[in-house]
Figure: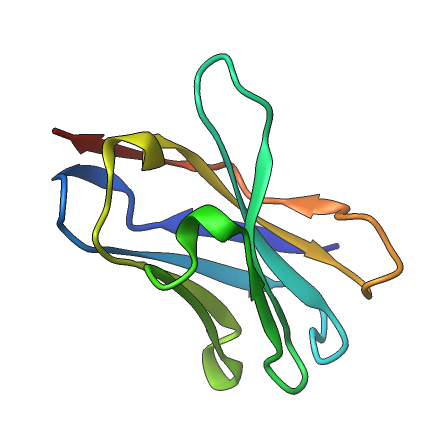
Length: 119
């Protein structure tokens, strides 16, 4: 079974930076795709960024391009989301998720971490 544990959320001011971490355990992730999602109150959950564990190919939703960076540390089985130039509209619960490949749905989820950006 896969376990994902997020950390690093908090309250920051607009323009600040924050780094989220997602520690993964339970199996070998070499073929997995890891994603960061977020869900703001009253809104649908959206995929913010994802990375292929093998090779490191990344993709981002348009609203965070140039501000957020997803990365992974193979030795630590950890995925990061570096967030810069934060805006109040980035306020949400951020979730780490994993899927076996690009053809599969996201089956594994962390508990979420709150990010609040004040203006």
